[in-house]
Length: 408
Length: 139
Image 1: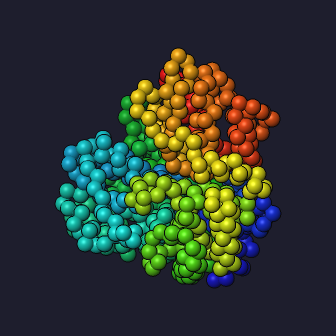
Image 2: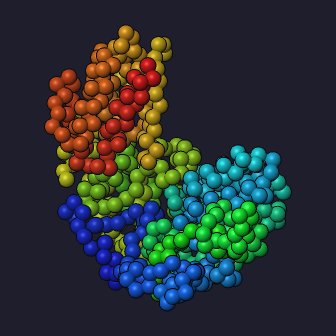
């Protein structure tokens, strides 16, 4: 894998921002799109656009083939048993909400337990809070070690036979840690709970095999993995999807409709009411082709190396705090530069053409755990290089000098 | 974009030496306001008597822009009538839109005019003023 060659395929990266060549380090928020994905979406609208699952005409067949072909591609990408285990959604948030609103509400009752970690993104936290409020279930948290990791001893101590659902992020969008979701799934199953994995930050960066993980549900977004916004998917084991009720009703998802009663299609189509994001699915399929061609293992290795390099280089800056463990992390580095507020850091970096994220990263409980109100985050992808890290380090030095004078 | 346009010396002075930072006990209304997109938060206390803002204090967490703006705002509205304070809030909105306005009542505020060139930071500067609006309405 050659990041410089791959970078050429991303038109957006070749521009100047505030007089400097753009260094895009906000990939954990959303990734940029290669030409092949942009072309696939464009081509779909130029040649094949039609509604799916109903047109008798040629365009209707092409659109349906493209949409269902994308489903096949996602199934293979995650190593699901069949395409029927893939529900297209708007993204990770919608996928997790589907599990919460449909599956969880039907199985959770008074005193049942939903097990999470304190590092979860708001989208893998609030849906469960709502389930708990509606059903009387209780939220329980696997404690986090001071270095941001989860220990299996704590997992074993937290999951009991009262647990109905265990939902954990595969990779933290703040700490960069990779959680032992396979081992957690094993513990969940031993106690009769289902395992939900938030794959938003893992799917773009590493090989994911849902059967190897043996998770029951797995959610991810297309836009963080070179695909368009507005498309993502929920993987669910077929037996579970079959017994779940839809949460959105209308066109496309029905089997037979009468004045007072209706029946649904089988999974996954019963969950996809209304005209779906067909062009998004086409773009996602093109993104999967792009990532497969580059090689997920190679991407993983490249980003791991880059994160290690960034971790070391940033740690050399006096007064900086880098969060999370050095080992066992993915390609992102979260930090604070002394007393300089992360928003101020991000603004100075932006004037140098460098895009990073500043804020709570949709993880307010985790921020409180880290005893900060906000942090800055640089997150890498396959097109980033060591030169980008050097630009970041130089700009951070400049930020320090600027605010050193200003704040004193 | 020049950094010095944004981070003027007056702003840094208010950030480093905040005016009216702290809490007060009696006869005051408290407004808590968050900026949910970035995590900034302010807790503003106003003591209003006979339609006049007698005292204004704040605590909070945020960037140099949001905290210096809170420092300036509390200083600026002290001793003013509610109508005058609201008129200043309107004028501050105009300042953020890049409209030419004078703050002869409290000139330091004009240093924040550069924020208008940094669209992502306008919400930082307006947090304290939004808290003020909420506070005087609830009075």
